[in-house]
Length: 462
Image (cartoon, rainbow, N blue to C red):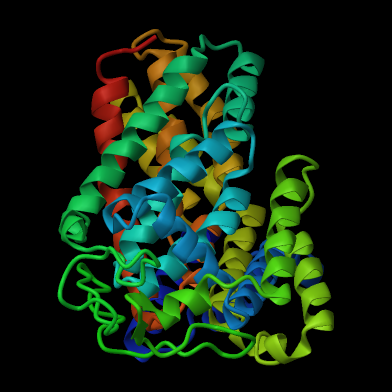
């Protein structure tokens, strides 16, 4: 049995044990990386550790630390209520606002994980407060980011178009952008319908400061949520952790005291909003690392208001960090061993171009669910060159199909975007949410590559 095949079988065993024995998958993956790296691939410790996703570790820790402080001092409450006022209390519009916002950020040049790191904590806080499915909200954020991710001036778009030019393949920047946009928009619409989005049209923000929310539950803390997260806030008092968070709901003169408290701008909240603005500008305008910037802002806030941040370190999503970093370290071992290249070359040797095309799309989707989307695109597009040269498959459609397949799966909890969604969700059963994201990511991996192959490759685009 080849070393490459052994490494794949070990990964399957890690998933099975983690699922059936309730052992942290990240811890198992670290052990597997050590065992396979040392015993099967004869890698030294430094090479094994080279696969550890240090930048992602800092992003997860920094972003969840910063927004734990923001939740403690009530800043996320303020942002949620500001969003409600912006859409005049129409909760049904908020998921689409998040989709458009992340899409706009990536379309103008933000790296997809950076856009998700900025938007996801706010979106998931809103979902928790208004009983919206966290899976719905998280998917809208990620698919929005990927929808705008291939514009001609975006990071992903520039990379893929550069690879196409380097490989001397026919290219079409607009087709690539529109293919990603429409696929992600279609998926977002399906998710919106399946996970209770339509029912949100009957839900209005009960804490609307104008006192205009409809329904008999106004002011009593009841929210008519729907979907997986339905009823999260029903009848519950979401007391703040300190520093002026939300308070018990009661009404005075038609306006809830909770709404007044949530909309009050205290010095801590003003400083936190300024810090979030610094994060956005630093990432988008100066291309600084989102994780290092977030943790720097968080430390400055903690130094000024230690009472708000005392418990924030404990609220960092450490379990999620362990899972993601462990699995990606093992994937790094697979890459170092050549397992991923081995699988791709095996598919490329198939004599039927259309079959090879769909298998490459599936390989791109499966591997990208655990590894760098950019890295996978950089590896798979050159692998497609030999059978694209035969002229039986259109290069424009094939490149677009590979690009979409390799990025649409970023809802997986093992990808950077999915991990940020998982880590950013407050007031959820994190293990249950992890399983939901994993199942949803599996469905996307199983369905989307075949669909984009049928739509973009089979007709022979380009």
